[in-house]
Image (tube, rainbow, N blue to C red; front, side, top):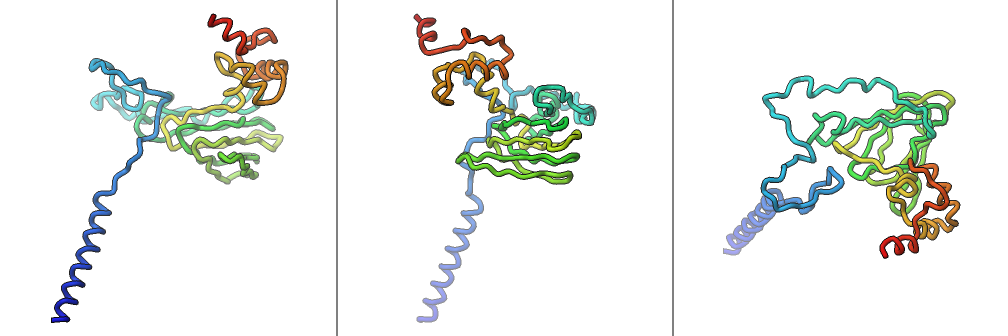
Length: 247
């Protein structure tokens, strides 16, 4: 009788383990929202409103041809005749519509001698970056302001996690080239300097002077480097001016 009880208990234990294992494998579900693939989506109750898939209409499959899946011109160097002496050409869903819903994008980054791909971040996708030519200094800044930096040479690859500030600087006297791939069809890009000093409208002078502990003249000088507008010392926005405009 005792042996029978042991056998029954053992059978129940095995059944319990099996049931727990079966349940854990079958009923596991994700409780998070999908990542955003556009800056915002204003909700509406109008049933006649247009429906998008990741921000794009879908082409009728009957009209799709092989040409829709091809992108040409990735071999063409970008123009590096700018203040940073570098240019990133992003092939995302806006430039290559076939990427819609596929969750990938690519970029080529061209560097003139000592060119800089300025500190920036991609809010919607991580990046893997491969050096094809040249020697680059690259860095990543974490959310606790720790810098991870290194020197990359031809054939080296580095990963830049989604949303973290990163940069690359050409250390050579000759041109450099890199290819970047993203885990998003529209990773987006925010340049740190432009995001502070090149906004439209401008961030209040009172915010920037206090944040950087400098006077308005310094802020205006920095703005003049990153804004397409004609900036003078008298065009800054302040709390007093803002309240005056509201009144």
